[in-house]
Length: 231
Image (cartoon, rainbow, N blue to C red; front, side):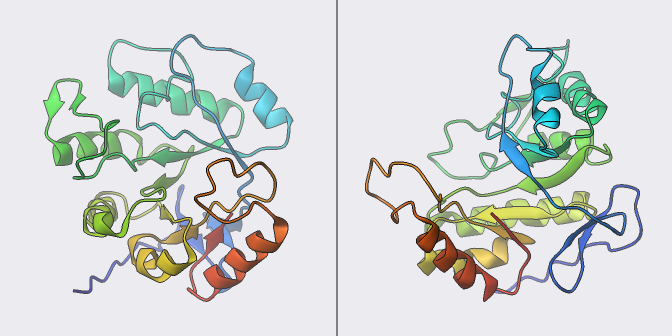
């Protein structure tokens, strides 16, 4: 079964699109994402975001849905916490890739957020999260998958469809670490990402060796998808 996703390419503010070469554009201006994984799950280090920005990064990805998003400390409501967090990121000209990857109907999603300020039900919670942050200038994209099995593709596609309806201004990022699964996951995001690492110890021996050679192989394979690629 095929689904057509059509995103709004009208001018901003905060509209994220791509040119014919896959270059990311924010309100029509080129933007090269240079990101770092970061999240605050409790007390706030008031200098952390400044250090990230000073180091040359321009965007942040937290892997938790809302549990890591306490960049301005915890407020009285989750809505206020998210809004204040994005305000804090904006102070340092940092963009945010919001992870909704746990918010799918899959049994092993142990980190799924089930309650948002008293609102329950997966689709309802997702709607509240999306509507809370979709118009914030710090939002860059939505992260919808991370090394998921093929069996979860339908659930990821449902999340992407909800995002396309509620927030057509921001793209979705989908990720797989397996070359053989790339073509399958290409239909679940506007941006394709992979996480073959150039250095490090592959302790579990479950993936490819962590070398620049394998990273190049992944990138060449990803380029065949004809999607913007983030690495």
